[in-house]
Length: 366
Image (cartoon, rainbow, N blue to C red; front, side):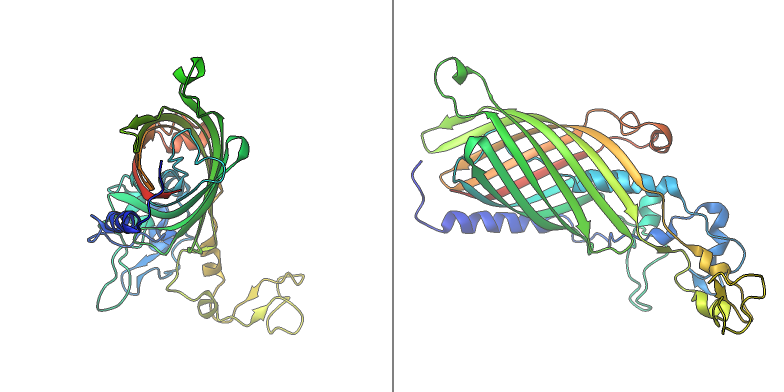
């Protein structure tokens, strides 16, 4: 292929990607995590006091974390930020580069209770506070990435990417590596068979002190390029991807509107020199209260770590005209999330359905 001498293809590609990134999401509400709301119904009185407002400790009960809802949230969010493996089995080639913008849209159970309680929702224009419930979560999670692919000898390719989760403060980043075991044969018996590649990737997030989420993947793909009029190439591809999701929480304060130090009448820790310390035996370094109690200190907790498996199929098509490259891809679960896991994870996911992701990519390759 002859190299293009104009920047018009690049400008057109970037304009298309920008339109993709902002299409169809204008009316959605914020999707930042609000894990303090994921408590069991039996402990609701500890976080909802009608007199003082939500998130205020009423002294009635210790907040009990809703581990199952946290697991379901991690399950669907992890699927959305996972590596897309959005490429054919053929690499960019030795010395090749590709710069592109990617947008992916993943279905979620937006009407489910764990999405409504587990994300912030709209801000009240008068009080400037988030609602006690997200009444309108996004129907799909949009992830937008800037990607750079670089080819190396022996069929190797490395990709770096960074972007964000739409309508949130979450930044998504990661890297991919793949090896094209068979690629580039055009004649003879090898030319009959499709290209074949295997790869691995990782995505992680930052921007939320409450949530730590990382997704690792391995994949395999086959593809067959079809040359059109000596100036463009259409490449359909098919693949399989295995995901392993790592979800953890930071410290979560289930009663953010109550200061545990003020509620306690805090004097210091249980050690020599602190008024009232040592009264219950040895100095143990616990908070010493005045007129209050230490009860609200127990409402800061972490969720148990979540480790989940997912299996999905990849179907896509890539098109390249001179230096402009465009791709479209569809991914969906091969099996239900519950069937891909075991034990308590399978029990928590038994009523959670499969997810699907549509992804689009536009950029320049040379």
